[in-house]
Structures are given as structure tokens and as C-alpha cells.
Length: 456
View 1 (cartoon, rainbow, N blue to C red):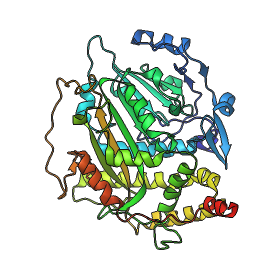
View 2: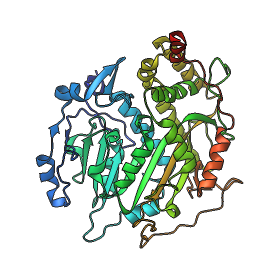
View 3: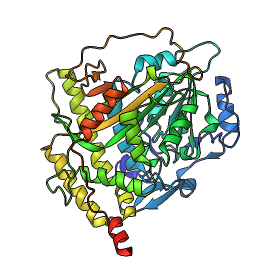
View 4: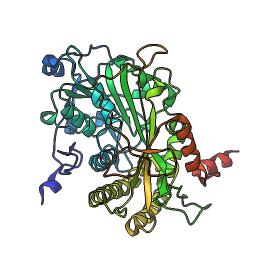
């Protein structure tokens, strides 16, 4: 039996590096939440003391799993919130780390607007830089940011304990278990960068959470929203790929679990539709605390398979690797949503059938589909109705001409060609309208609808 096979499947695992998927068995210690009134520690000298004195619990998988985790249809689910119903187990951690790697390869860094982020986080005497990662998942982004900016203090927050070994945790990094739906007032005006990725389906009131997140920023700080589009798009035109259903039997079965994930989340109380409207059409241009001149949105299309090609050998290598990672991610991902779909009323047999058909599509690569990642970012004003403070030393890198005839701008990346920035709110709205033209006007059958009819 290999070392991998002997590992307890319920124990936390962590990838040692975003490019290395070797699991290790760990018992993780976390500094506790400061939401109950503990003060935040400002200096690095206090870091070790802070970890021991303000820690409210030490998590060990063999002792505390039942407190923070529960089982649903054979998968471990967080026990703190019914809103976010994706698994939190070793299979999901592996999937999320692969997804993380694909996303950062597509962006070319751990974050968009790289020059601005680095200028914001540049060390300054007497000013401790702070980074907040909301919905940190496996903690891989949190830890990588702590390594890239060792002078900054980095906090990751998630609904479930993060699978990071205490002896692998950078001294400037810590984690908290919390539900951001409950508010973030204990973090007000403390952070230079707030990163919130792939949590849209778990948010109950998106506009409230947006305001809460923006309130965490210091003047001039940047918020970065990243979430998935629950629809798939063709590679050649980035046009909508129809979902397979009784209405469109020739549609894509891979699209069906994603479509039903969004619908099931909404039935469970998620405000995911507002998230889509805001990040795709409104951006952060209308946010009271955010300087409109610093706002951007973006679309990044990640191929679902190693079929995308380029004449540039390095770009081709990136596309192949990202495509391979995303195929593994989505193959595991459409099965990860089974507990959510079953909870909403679908039978286990039906969702298994969808996934079996989706796997066949992924293997054949006949339909070259991409998953779109939606992004929005902007900087906090220096005061009411004032612009964000200037960024001294900001390195301005010329952006090459657009590769398409529209006004979306490639982000100047040589190696991944499908990252497009929308410079204005009008441009963002126009592209959203183009993507939505072919989408379903009539919803496919859902068991909950049938039950409602029977009750009448």
C-alpha cells in the first residue's frame, strides 16, 4: 500500500506547492476569530504571542471534525452554514488547488491589476500592510500571498477549518472560521487588499456583503472579486453553449450540473443572480466607497480540456496545462455539487446520469467549451466623494492594441490569450448583453416546481 493510500481520508491535506499535488496528513492549529471583540495585533513581534493568546480553538481532524463538519450524501459539508453546500473534504481540496493554479496561470499572477496591487502593498515605514482573503478554501492563495509579501499580515476566512499544517504556516499568516454573511464590522478600515473568490453561491445578500467587504478597506485599498460564470461558452466565438434539457436535448450535458447548481443555490436562499448582475454589468463603478476611475471588470475564459492550441510554443504549453487542470477540476466539480442538487429535489440517479454524460463530453473534447471567470476590482476613496489616493512609484506598463475589434483589452499577457479587461461600465454591460442573447428564456423542469403544482 502506498503512503497516499494509507492516509486517513477524513484528515486535512494541503498541497505543498500550487503545482505539486502530493497530500500530507496534518493536524491544524488556527488563531481564533477576533469577531468576539479581541483586538487585532499590529506588529510582527507579537505574531507568535498572538497565535497562542487569542486562539480560541485548536482544530484536529480526529477530535473536532464533528463540530465544524457534517456528512451529506457521502461528502463532508461545513456545519456552520446551509447556504454554502459544496464539500469540504480531501477530494474537494485537491480540486480547488488545481482550480487555483489554472486561475493564477490565466491571470499571470495571484491577482489582476498586478502593478497596482504591488504598489499598494509596497513596504512603507510605520504602515503595516494587511491582506484579507474571504472564502479562502484550502488557504493556498492566502499562504502564497503571505510568502510573496512577507512584510504584510495575511488573514484567511472560511466556513470550514483550513487544511494547512501549523508548521507550514508563514509567521505572517493566520486563518479564521467565520460566515461572512453575518457581517465584517470587526475588520473595518484594516486592510490594503481584500480578495474574495468563488463564494457567490454562498452569499445571501450580495449588495450588503459588497458594502461589508468595501468597509474592510483602508483608504486607497483594493477589493478584488473573482467568481465563476455558471454557463459555458464555445471556444471559437465565446458564445453561449445551450444546456441539455427537455427543451434543448442537443445541448451540453456538462452545462446541466452548473445550471442546476445555480438554480439550487437560489432555491436555498443564495443571491447569486445579483452577484452575476453586479460583477458582469455594474462592476464597482456605482459603489459609494470605491473610486470610479480605478474600477475595471474582466472576463477570463479557461478551456475545459487540453484542446486549445497556439503557434507560440510557450503560449501553447500554458493553454495545454490550464486546459488539463480545468478538465480535472470540472470533472470533479460537477460531482461535488451532487449533495446540493439532491437537497433541492433531484434524485441521485438523475444527477449521476448527468455527470456520466458530462464525463463523456469532457473525454471526447468534441465540443470545445470554456468556463468563464468573472472579475471586478477597484480602490477605496480617500474620503467621501474624493478619489483614491495616488500610488507613488506605480509602474505603468503599456498595453498592446486589442486583439479583437471590440473595446475589450487583453491584459498584456503573452502566455495566456483569453483574459479580457472591460475598461468602462458601458463596455462591461455591452459584453454581458452579447453573452446573454442566446441564453435560456424558459427554465427546464425542476422537481420543486412539480411539487408546488401538486400542492395547488
